Image 1 (cartoon, chains in turn brown, yellow):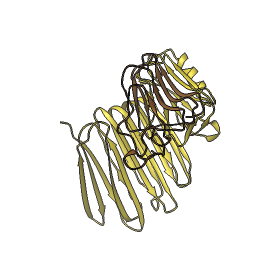
Image 2 (cartoon, chains in turn green, brown):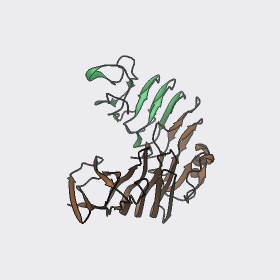
Image 3 (cartoon, rainbow over the protein chains, first blue to last red):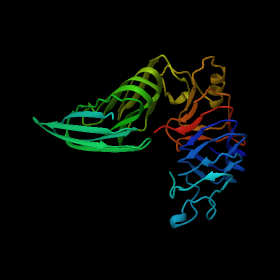
Image 4 (spheres, rainbow over the protein chains, first blue to last red):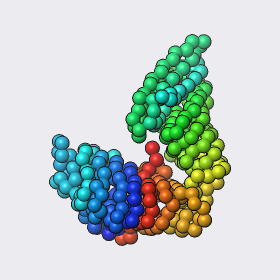
Length: 102
Length: 270
């Protein structure tokens, strides 16, 4: 999934599940969660976006076990925001992350 | 505590090679039992897995020097997810049939490697479930698939010469919509309606008068379009049939917008 201003928008939707996707090359956000939504984001490759995951909701988003890019080494390999990897903003739990691409 | 039993019988005589792999997912203990018989003798192997919810066990048996093996498995499952695949390696590549049963009440799955020189596989299943998918891939790269729901009967075959998959069902618990390039010739044996664009399937799902969740399956290919999932029934889903590597949604500065849709799933199947 690629090329949008945001690849995936989730709004006014509870308990969305985003799993097993590759989300790449979106100018603003790979995933944008807002307007009272909640959900889980797991086992995805999220790379090359402006921001990997931008959550604007108060509910903590489970974003564990995603691969955020090829940057970083050792324990920090694939970590969000590390050495050019996509990052996250908002109340997001991203630990643990995947050290290699799915 | 409920136990699950798989029983696989193989009659193997001579000359070829066969690889059988079962992948299973359960929230409760699972036992896989293989019985390999040849020349009046048999060997049994049983593995028991105590799985957490969502975890997966893989078990395989290599059967050397077989000619015309007949392989069958039997699975009667309670609530949970099941994924079984059977693969034959003809030396040029692998032919695979697989069935996934998601949130099944009960399913009986038979997997067969009834083959000439171990080139063919077939799999069939019946039962009742929220959703399911049968796939077939040949060693020459051909593919077919079929989704199902409710009370279903489904079957698929894969050989180095071709593939087929079909499914019939009644009392659907999902409204299924398939997105596929018609030139691929996939899903010919499906009773679910097919659309060339994701937007066509989304519009049809929106117009559907039932209260069942909607399930849109997207075939391999690149789709240059966005999609707006607005006010879909609870627990609806948009699923890639073959995985993220084979289905690309290039939204062309649009996006996939999920709004007012609770428990929506955007994912690939096991």
